[in-house]
Image (cartoon, rainbow, N blue to C red; front, side, top):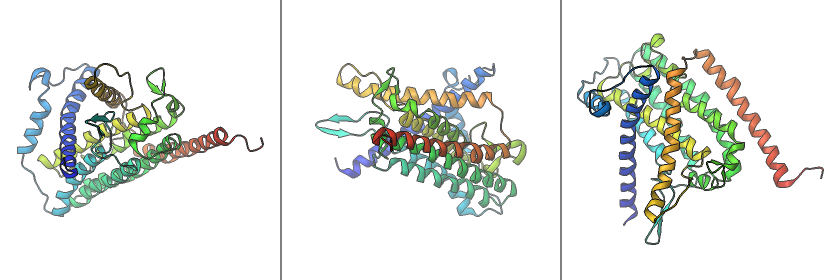
Length: 346
């Protein structure tokens, strides 16, 4: 099999996996939130309403897309595409299971296994800001512009905290490769949580909080505060163009949950036994189990906490999370220095 064909197959499988996951994710969120709020949720389309997301997608596909008169058409149309593409690109470096060996060849269960995976993720996620900014500016309306300005400021501030929360992971694992980071977590604490990641619990909390802001999820969904700015940066979008933003947001939720799993929860690590095929499947099961638990936590928070004020949101990012992560990095650096080199006065 040529390298090109293998790359195409990997990308197609990753794309199909993400689309299927998003369909399931939207349904799970609707049902879970409805149960938390003593409602029934979707019931009509398919068994238990499981086809409701597919029905909504088809409705959006055939719905008329309206372009505002004052819009910059090319940038207006490019914005939702950029949002989806950046979300898809981020997933490509996340391994969903342990490498498998077939006929003497080892295959990574990530579409791309690169040595600087963490830097790649930070770079791609920062490009996603452009999609929101362009959507608000190119719409030719003041309300989407306000939403996009909010989004840019929010994502930049919380991306800084997210990047700093990853520094201790690199310090302990000694690598920027996602697969290498997972491999370095194979020593376990009570058979579930990586031993050295117990020490990194503060980084885990900061990364998860920044993930809420990065994906514009409640209580950090100021970008789409309907009571204040109509509908946010995608106010002037309809039909499939709006659905692409919707798709990108839910892909990002899965990406952040998967990243939390591989960086702090051991990724695919877990009990593996039985024949060869089962040993291939079980790591994928453990990865998906941990990822979906994080996703359910996202949904639970959305149904439980009220939206913050914008000044509270920004103050929390700049005055709390960033100083906390900087101080934590300094403490860990001192601790690692003592562990590796001993006390300077000894």
